[in-house]
Image 1: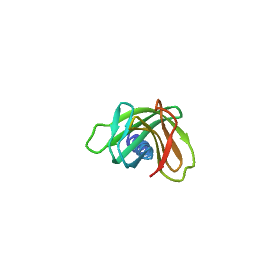
Image 2: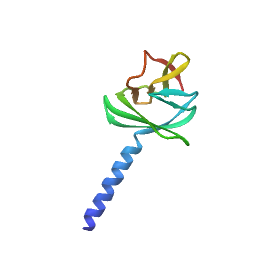
Image 3: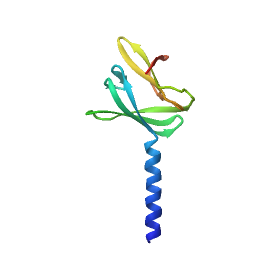
Image 4: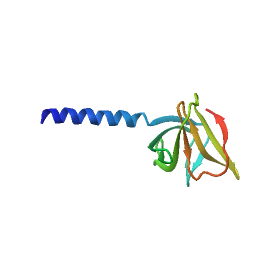
Length: 118
């Protein structure tokens, strides 16, 4: 039974370490619309689950309820963090977040992206 407990703890640690790698704090320079909710300006923890087009993004701004939207994860060597938005009638809609080795694409976001480095 003791071996099972040690193996279980090692497995639990592996999963928690993996989950920790699926998040990044992103600094938004202004508020952006994500789905039907607004992500405020400032540092926001962004986490993702799933793979390919079967993924979800969760935005966790400090002091606010988390926002979860459908997404697509694309492997890409971007090298820097960039946020792409589109302006629709004065509202900035988030389209994608480029991270070092992948791009997080918000599904069902309006129109083509306009990139702004961050």
